[in-house]
Amino acid sequence: MASRARLSEVCCPQHPEAHLIEDYRAGDQICSECGLVVGDRVIDVGSEWRTFSNEKANSDPSRVGGPENPLLNGSDLSTIIGPGTGSASFDGFGGTKYQNRRSMSSSDRALINAFREISNMADKINLPKTIVDRANVLFKQVHDGKNLKGRSNDAIASASLYIACRQEGVPRTFKEICAVSKISKKEIGRCFKLILKALETQVDLITTGDFMSRFCSNLGLPTSAQKAATHIARKAVDLDIVPGRSPISVAAAAIYMASQASDDKRTQKEIGDIAGVADVTIRQSYKLMYPHAKELFPEDFKFSTPIELLPQL
Amino acid sequence: MDHMLPSPGFSIPSIGTPLAPAGEEEMILPSAQQQQQQQSAQQHNQQQQSQQQGQQQQGQQAYSGGFTPHSMMQPHTPVSNVFSYKIRNIVSTVNLNCKLDLKKIALHARNAEYNPKRFAAVIMRIREPRTTALIFSSGKMVCTGAKSEDDSRLAARKYARIVQKLGFPAKFLEFKIQNMVGSCDVKFPIRLEGLVLTHSQFSSYEPELFPGLIYRMVKPRIVLLIFVSGKVVLTGAKVRGQIYEAFDNIYPILKSFKKQ
Image 1: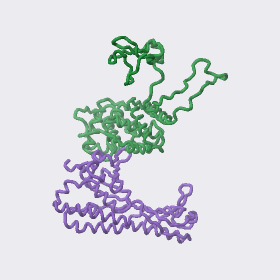
Image 2: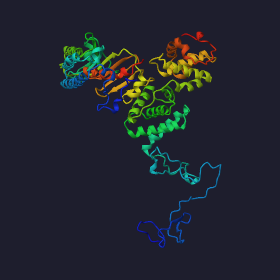
Image 3: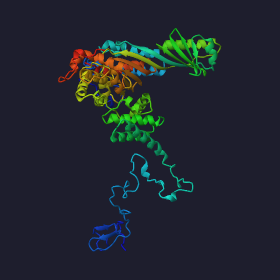
């Protein structure tokens, strides 16, 4: 057998400097100079069973267990008893023996619930996985910080989804998040401010252009109208025609103006439904923008209704 | 953009207190400017001492006394003397130091409403000074709606007198002003987006939630609501001097974000 060196590394007694070749299948370490087997019972890290490429199999036999979620506390390598296979796992009455569903890590339970909520909410408004992941990370950070412990987890989840959308550059309005969540806009707004304070981050201010593509495609407007509306809204903010108005209202009024000047007309009520603003709000912003309509439209816009005939509410 | 101030975060020990703007400094002679800084330091010390004594009148006098010879020496006057701003509301509390029977008070007093299912206090109003008081059964009372500190104290005394006349041994202990709200107008429109970009650690501007910018000043701990029109609401002050000080601090910042 091999004698251990002072450095507690195995080496060949005749060739201490020789590189050792490791053969995992036999569990040996072999000296490359003389072929002496110096390692013994090195643990075989090869796979336990043979795997064949099988397209129909829904479980990959070369993997043991599911993917580990780094956000959860799962790196403590705890295991649970899985569902039984075969008839021996059922007792006389048909119930399963060895039930072990209860004691899952209790600290993770809130996290898992929240992740599921975030995933459900994001699914309803078709948010991509990057935003969901970011929202999960934010939730975990808030949860670890513990200064928002008193707030309902659903509220924190909704607010972290809102912040994730903002941080990715595709903000959703509070009303859109409200529509997929049980929490009121007021509570989401409060949690939003608290989370920003707790995590010491900032978010960019919302602009009118962030919502144009979404609102216009929901209304079914052609891209020419969308481009015109974007231009109108940006010009209106630059010329400071609508001071103090929420960017959503300005965007909605710009869409109204662009759609009224093109073939595809939309009423204020329809736009208000999509954007989540009242139609009187659109009317107010439109009244401010109407006198400057000539400067607001882009130069290459094809008017089906000329500016003079635009509705004057 | 030459009036743009540096972010206070990384220049000054007391975060939230901005440096004097460059534009106004040019109007002042260097020797006079040094005197102004000394004077403002002195006036600060005076104010702190008088605030510790807890007497608002003395604070006011020290403030104006500190500035009279000061303003004679240089053209620069503190902006709070120039702009009309008003204290709009004062909230104060006082302890009457005796247990009260709210039902009896509600029945015998005029202008009192008591709805125990909705709120556990008697809501009483007097016409002169026009104020509202919440009177609790423990003997504590909250007085709101007064426009000046003296009015608040006077109104609280009147309420205590009413309670006394109803037969309770009411005293007038620990009258304390808890909150003062003031509003003013800088008379020019303000670029809130610029302000939230530079002072992001103190400001919060969410047009979806509230149309004004919420600025939480640290040095006098005051919350300011700043609107696009140039109107500013200041709240959270315990003494009048804090509102003056907060407005003096915010005015140069707002001037640098004036809309052209």
